Length: 273
Image 1 (spheres, rainbow, N blue to C red):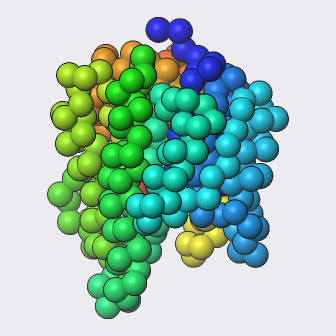
Image 2: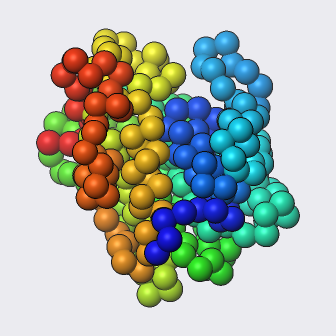
């Protein structure tokens, strides 16, 4: 395979900031067409970045970009976003299911609206976005679906204290497993990617007690995602992949450049032993 996305169309949910934006910009550096689908169409006072600023960064990186306002809890908005992508670029070659909601609280501190939000975005939204994109992916020459979700584990320690969040993220991971099996024979790769360490994003400020100097930057996940979706879609599907492992396999030796502070010990991310 030629490891480039030049001329390919990449649909990224939740691409206005953080890991989603980093993946979009990395794809754009190849000359890809990037669809930034997300809710943030106006600047939030709490979190920087919008679908429009992310699209501008993609264009500055060398790609073509389309910013589409899309709340993936709404099936009609998903359909409209996919239709806009096809109208502009005529194809979808790669889908990155990045949009996610987080609430790291226990049973007694989790209101039903938070439970519903995480399941509507993380599980239902991922399923419906993939469903809407799949007819177009099936026509692509090297189609990939990538979930930003963790390896599955039944260890109670990954549930205790935030059962609702874990259930929703594992729902994404189970979606990956099922769709990989369903579409493997039709040449669509469906895999999951998760970071080895905590990633420094704007959303991290919503989580108290995190030392950002012990994190890595989103570009490590973006580079790993690029390596996955530029590989032969028939070579690997149904895999739970870790960013550092993917890059080591690709020949990357210098990981210090991904650290916020290379002198500090890194914080491991959730769900990894």
